[in-house]
Amino acid sequence: MCGIVGLLVKKPALRPRLGELMVPMLIGMTERGPDSAGLAVFTEPLGEDARKISLYSGMSEEGADFNWLGLGHELKEHLGVEAKIVAQGNHAILTAAIAPEPVKRWIKERYPKLHILSTGRSIDLYKDIGTPAEVAARYAFSGLAGSHLVGHTRMATESAVTPDRAHPFTAGEDFCLVHNGSLSNPYGVRRMLEPHGIRFETDNDTEAACRFLEWRLREGDDLETALQKGFEALDGFYTFLMGTADKLALIRDPFACKPAVVAETDDYVAIASEFRSLAHLPGIQHATVFEPAPEEMYVWNA
Amino acid sequence: MERMSFDLAQVPLREVNTFLHKDAPARGVRQVVVTNPDGAHNIAVGLDCPVEVEVHGHAGYYAGGMNKTGTVTIFGSAGTGVAENMMSGRVHVKGFASNGAGASMHGGLLVIDGDAGLRCGISLKGGDIVVGGSVGSFSAFMAQAGRMVICGDAGDALGDSLYEAVLYVRGNIKSLGADAQIEPMTEADFATVKELLTAAGMQHDPHDFKRVASARNLYHWNADADQEY
Image 1: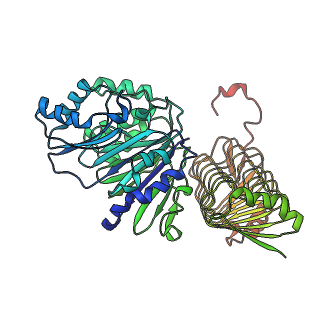
Image 2 (image 1 turned 180 degrees about the vertical axis):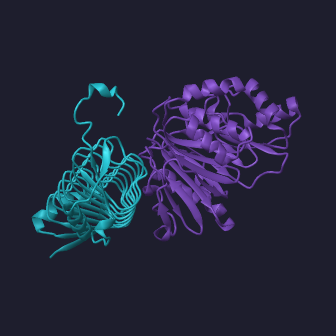
Image 3 (image 1 turned 90 degrees about the vertical axis):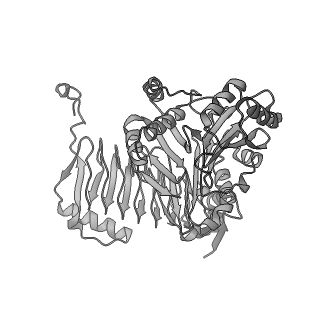
């Protein structure tokens, strides 16, 4: 199983309410995914030269007591980087006017157990084990603001229940993917990608899909072309919901093995595995509700 | 005639289904209205008394499943497996239906005013399905008995490995499944389509429909086919 939710608000006035509107959607998918939950929220982008990096310390010895302040001092000392770190327990968002790669390399060497969740000008990412309600409360999801988000509740089938194997998965910058289903050729996809220098962090099948699509985007494909190549390269059952800095995209496998339903109003586009997660949304009685067709691309602009 | 209403925003579904199974027959309640279904699964499943259930809103999975004697009307869409394994009675979806509508039905009438998803009428064992819109791919897969009327289009592999169920399609068929073939309509077929459209409250000319049935080539093992059908 697994549950997928996505929400894109069309009116800037609704952006401060994005998290508040989404939390019941996420909790609505608890029966489909009780073991882990996560979400990626896309905010107003930083300037061209700035980046933010979401970090997770839950797999380090210190856990929620991780010394984030110390990390900031060390970054300044070793790399001369002036970073702003907003921490909340085992999660932190590091913002700095830098090229992110040297910083990420340094973090991986100095703190190998610190998990880098996402990188970009717009994306903030949170994921952890626990029920959707627990994870939502742990990171105060209801207070999140932004233009669109991608969320997931996990019932693990293909790899262990650990925070790094929870969804969303990310690759590159400002790109994330959540998955309901199971791929039958993730190792083939990995073997194809690894010679291109693409490295994997888990044994999770979804990570293969995420890195494949991000690789296509990085190679110059537009989102539609990348998704078309995804249809050809990825075998198995899937409903994929993807987020970029300015788009939400949804595809389903040719057999539509995994569910999805969309509700659209003048105010928002909401996506969920089942209508249960959409029922509470304002104005849902008058929303256009439809089931996305298999092997079709649905792309919404923020 | 007593009429009961349940608001699923206030009452757990189990209470509604328990009422339908035990209290409704005992008290002779013939009409039950369910509001705020909000996509809940298993609404009005296994009805075993002559009760009319109205569901106002979108239903989740398996609504009206295993129905025997009830009449279930959903004023909204239905999730996966609506009227799955219905034995008799009637289920009417006013909106669209998701995948596997009427799967493994043995009898009764399933009416879907909108589109149906993939695998509509899969393993149909009897009864009738009338779809006002189109059906997705692999519909009527291995359908053994019963009738389907599709007023819109059909997706890929319609009637794959069909047994003795008969399908009537008004629109385009993207592709037929293995062993399914288009056959000429007879007077009996026109009468059947008319009867089913009338029962479903739909108005189309039976002459616009094509008949799809089994070529029965898969019924017998053919050693010369070399597994190429």
